[in-house]
Length: 173
Image (cartoon, rainbow, N blue to C red):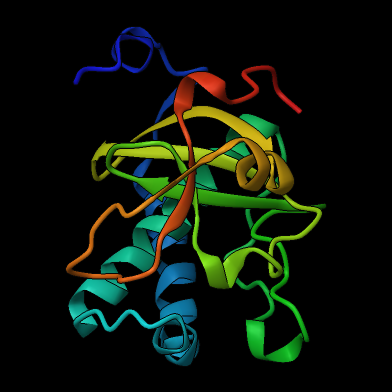
């Protein structure tokens, strides 16, 4: 069934990132990938090294786009997760950037408490340098108002919470 609210929705912002912005995101993503292999395995998902590095890199470049939208600087040299009891936010003061090629804002079961009190921004990318911002939601809104679903049973056996794009806050936080 086609969700016309999703099909007709326009992004709140769209950025064609420069070569330097993409490079900075890639450097940050590679560093993060190199230091976070255990987190992926703890979640019950075992990607190939290429899938894992690609995901970390695209996610970090999406953070560059979200930082641009928020009007804050992106720091590729952020502190790694291992230095905190909980994961530091992707962007200050409390933003998590969720990137995907399609779909809504997703929280996996192992992320519910890690993201408590955070605001999550949904970013998609259609090709390596074009990123679209769809909006944001508080972590508790995704868990309380989102749909519980199984997006990809082959890759992850656990259900996730998903908030569709059309239910995101569309004004800049």
